[in-house]
Image 1 (tube, helix red, strand yellow):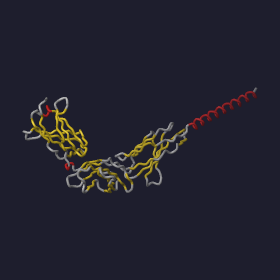
Image 2 (tube, rainbow, N blue to C red; image 1 turned 45 degrees about the horizontal axis):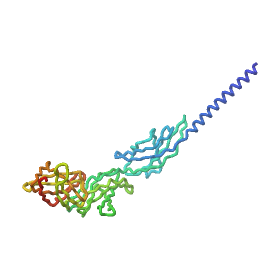
Image 3 (tube, rainbow, N blue to C red; image 1 turned 180 degrees about the vertical axis):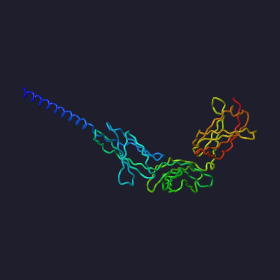
Image 4 (cartoon, rainbow, N blue to C red; image 1 turned 60 degrees about the vertical axis):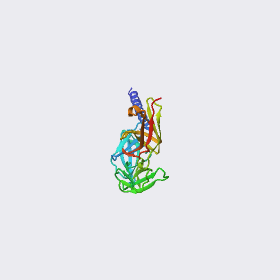
Length: 320
């Protein structure tokens, strides 16, 4: 009887040991099934507050992420951690190039494993400048201004006329440049790039300005009664450049002063046309009226005007 009890005890112990072994094997299998995922670093953005923002795709099952960071002059990486799929790096020195990588982190008890490192992205910490002014006075240089950028050694300026096939480049240490002997009546295009030694930032948006607008004047080609809902006078003119709007002046032959209509925002390219409501402008049939027009350009909210066109006289007939 005692022998039987001993056999039962040994059997029970073996069963319990086998059960424990099977459970442990199952846990190992489950951990092995959680394979670290390689993530993709999607974006690096440098902001004006000297912060680099990183973004990447989520890795399934990851408990966090590790970021590797270094400057172009560093020999090794420094490491940062993040819980989500983005990170704002505020410890940035302007005027250099940073390299970033990211990888997923997996934790199981006291064990930590990592996914493979992502692709590497670089970013230049020179913020993009903005051209703030294009100023021209007759027979003076074209003055180009832009905002100051932190971390620069100088700026690379590019400018050209609309008729030029290539850009003109200048290295400038200040935030302005005077283009000597600027061509009146030509449209200039300008952009600026911040530099720190050989490290280049982003080019600014290309800005343009037609200088010496008063070197030209429109030509009124015809004035006639328009086919519109109310009685209208239609004025047609030509001008060699695309402009942002026009100013039309009208007066009766017996008047001393002109009335003006500014039609800003209705741009024209080469040919201009405008209809004047006769009732609104008090144009009376049976009288002769004079018309003239000039072009408007709006650069950085600074209006420039062409010379006035020829004065065109028109007798307004009575309605048939």
